[in-house]
Length: 341
Image (tube, rainbow, N blue to C red; front, top):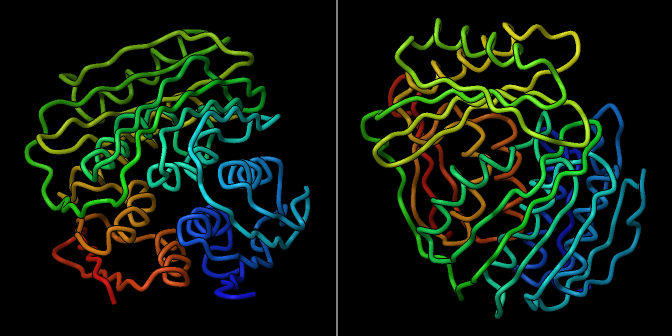
């Protein structure tokens, strides 16, 4: 098939991000995708329900032809049509991450000819996935600087394993994304810790806030928010407000993990971010490299790139003629520069 892109899903860290990035770029570049060895490095390899939801969402927004899209499948053929924009209602049918499904289709819809409204039911706060709060307050403010208007709204929380959360997104697209640079964060204005608790003792959140304050300073803001959801859940955020960027670091409570350990994990990651001096955190770097690649220019400064980041870069280069370089600047700060190749 003409312009077919062949991707081996076992490349790099071999996870679901290979699938999601490949689907996004297949739609944007209008190039058919042949993806094999999907999630081959995971304990449960192949397509799981969350990944199937991402494939279905990608299919819907561009009327694609898809082969092999079923639970457990290790390969798919994805032949995209034209992205139309419009209204899309999607359900994962589990506590799988609504934000990861959203991110699969977000960039194609930002470049669609018409506006879109997307509603996704599923997990809104899941371990190993960015929560809706991160998407809303960290990722999207930078994307809006590239031109499109994108807003997300959480109307119902969904924690693992019950799910049942609901998130809406409104997207006003642009024809091209404009390059930006994100190399300075400015001074830190304030730090805020928030513990979300649902169907669990509120005291869990207070224990977490106490530890975070002990680690980051008693003068930081701290609060416990009791929220409603289909099942129990606990998430701890540390939000770092800087002059030019906001970072959110997250830790998830789960059975067998003491509240104090949840808090210590997030506090130490926050300390690493603060110490690095870099504006772009590790998880944001993973997500930011794709829109930067689509602009074909720009740079950002982050912490030492992860294998997840490197894998995403490998996938991007299969579709786009871009040169993505990483250079250690000083200590824990690394500069990522994107140019057309």
